[in-house]
Image 1 (spheres, rainbow, N blue to C red):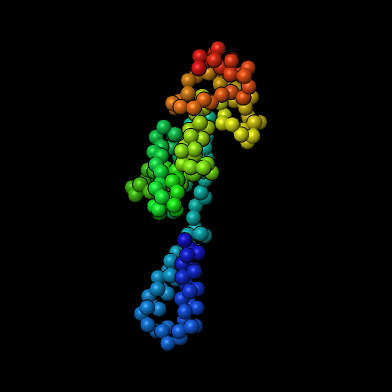
Image 2 (cartoon, rainbow, N blue to C red):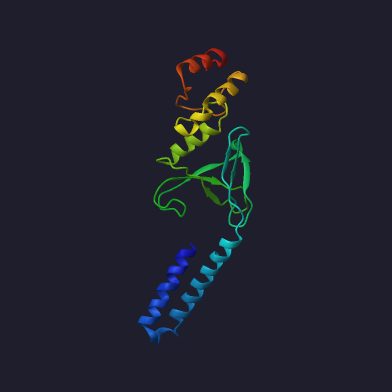
Length: 187
């Protein structure tokens, strides 16, 4: 946003060189002041903003996401988070449906938690699959180093049923592990 105000300032300066007689008019001074204050606001925010963190804690079932502007980060259990989506053309959407979290502040501001799926439904499915500690880790090589340890942890707990309902299968890494989960956990 600060870049937008800087662009406006540059356009106004170029316009001042092109039309030097107009520099003292209201149509030049007021936009210049607004753009300058907007730019200075975002420069000040850049140097004073708190650390913004996004943490998906699968083991404890909590998500930490950034607060609005200078507010502290927000940590909430996954069960209490309200997921919404932006529509095409909305301020947060930018022409596509995006997954959002409603911040629990007085303004009910939104936090964009899209994680790179093709759409908001894939993002939500992945987040819920990952955050459900009773399911195997989602597919993908990023989790391969942790699959065996996660399987043994869930096996020791007796393969409890998933925390969230799902309409798609979440298989184990190998057919043997899948058979063991079905035998011990019953699902």
